[in-house]
Image (tube, rainbow, N blue to C red; front, side):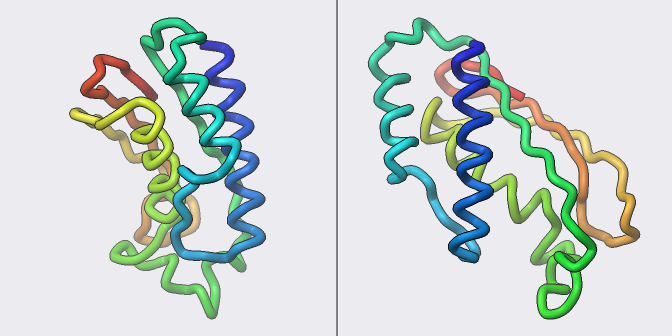
Length: 133
């Protein structure tokens, strides 16, 4: 489990750097060499049976992140740091551990006064019986 958490922390940092460099609206990291190698390691069984996974993405977005020309990030239909960023974590979780069959979410506090979600927590159940947060 500690290996997976360490790998996830590395991927999160790598992802943030990739986003900074590319400025793309969506980048699937599945073909990235680090992800390919991690997937091969997971699939090889050398980590043992994976029962649970945990990921955390934490950042303080500066106010300028929500201002022109990117004020669309304040709109619940198109933005918010949860919507914009969580999709990449879910993409990697599914790539590593298979389809997600159940999700439970709690939305946290909003501190900026925007209508978009800023904080939250989720639990996941994968078809493979792995659970995650």
